[in-house]
Image 1 (cartoon, rainbow, N blue to C red):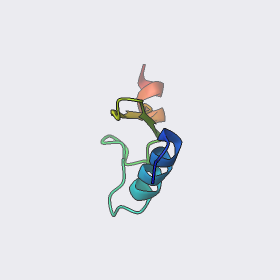
Image 2 (cartoon, rainbow, N blue to C red):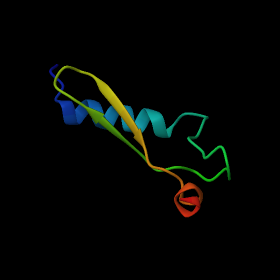
Image 3 (spheres, rainbow, N blue to C red):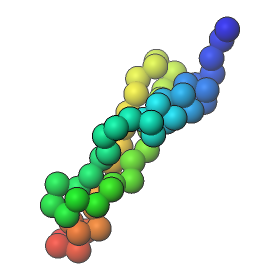
Amino acid sequence: MTLRISDIETIISDHMGQQPYQITCSSCGEDLKFSLDFDSDYDLKLQVDPCECIKEEN
């Protein structure tokens, strides 16, 4: 079975969604938005967007 990068991204996203932990802001505790990127070399990049409370401080 050959997997495409989009298949792997879906598998990883589903897996991350089923984990008992969350990515939260250390200042206010809100859930943070994140995105996954998987390139052709099978490198995984997880990008976490800054929290609104941090954006407001700047």
